[in-house]
Image (cartoon, rainbow, N blue to C red):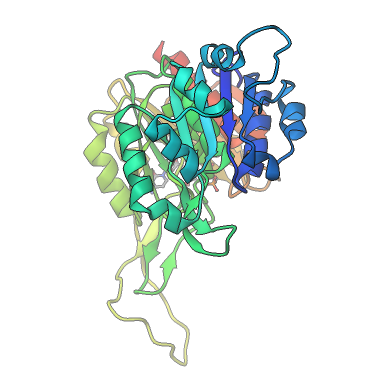
Length: 400
Ligand code: PMT
C-alpha cells in the first residue's frame, strides 16, 4: 500500500547516537513506500553510521557539510528546507533538542530546521537520566508549545547497559506516524470504528486462567490502519504485549465479560465494528478468592457460557457495519457462513488455523472473506497490516 506516502518528500536529520542504525531500517522502509528521502547527517552521527549507507538506501546524496558546493547551484539548506513535506530528526540527541530550543543554527541540520516551514517531528534517543533531566524536559515542553511533534522514546535496556526510558521508538512505529500524518484526508475520516483484539483471560483463581494463543497482531493491525485512514478508533484489547497503536484509543480489558461491557458502552456511537479478538466462549463458573490447592485426585472446573458479544451486537445492527472473524480448524467456509447469518454480519474474515502462515501469532494471514450475500473472496498470504487494508477497503465499499 504505497498510495499515502508515494512521492512525498521527507528530510531526515540523523544525529550522533547508536540508534542511528535503526534509522537505516526506517529509511529503507520509507524508500519501499516510494518516498523521496533526503538525509542530513551531523558530524557526530558519522561516527555511528557511514554516510554511504544512507546514500545507498535512499539513492540520494547525503549532506553533512554546510559549505559543500552543491551540484545544482542551490543553497542546500534552503533548498532542502523548502523541498521537505515533513522533517524528521532521528535519533534526536539532547544536544540537537537543546540547540533547536535555543534557536541555534550553526551547522547544516540546525540551519535547515530553522529555514523550513514543514512540520518537524523529533524522535529522541538517549540515556534515561539524560532524558529525565529537567533541562531537556523544559526544552521539549518549549518545542511542543511551538508545534514540534515528539515521538516519545520507549522503555527498555539501553546501549549503555541501563534500563529505562530512552530507546528510540521502533522504525515501524515512526513509519506509521509518518503515514498517519499524510493520511489525514483518508477514506474513513469522520467514522467511529471499534476494533477488538487479542485473547481474553478467564480467571480460575488468583494465579490461573483460561485463555488462547491470540497475540493481538491481527486486531492491532486493523486498528492502526483504520486510524491511518482517518477513523476515530477505539481498540478494545485483551492482554497482549503489543505497544498501543499510534493515534488509537486503546482500552485494555481482561475477560470476555469486561470486553462485552466495554463494547456495549461504545456501540451506540460506532459506525463500524471489527471483531478480531479471540473471545473465550466459556469462563469458570466460580473464580476462587484463594489459590486452589493441589489435592490427591483430579480437579473438575465447571464452566459457564460467556456472552457471545458479536451475536449481541448483531441484534442491534441498524445501519452499522459489522465484521467478524472466524477461526476454524475444519469446514472453514460452512462454519464461517453460519456465523455470518447467525451474528447478522456484513462479512466475516475466515482463517484456518491449520494452514501455515495463517491465524495466531504470525505476522501474516491467509483468509477468505465471506459476505452476507454468500460471495467469497480468497485472499492469499500477506502481512496482517496489508490484510487490514483489504478488510478496510471492503468496509469502505459497503459504506459507499
Ligand atoms: O491475535 P493474532 O495472534 O494475530 O491472531 C489472529 C486471530 C487468529 C485471533 C484472528 O485472526 C481471529 O480469527 N480472531 C477471531 C477468533 C475467534 O474467536 O473466532 P470464533 O470463530 O470463535 O468467533 C467468531 C467471531 O465471534 C469472532 O469475531 C469473535 O470475536 C466473536 N466472538 C466469539 C465468541 C464470543 N463469546 N464473543 C464474540 O464476540
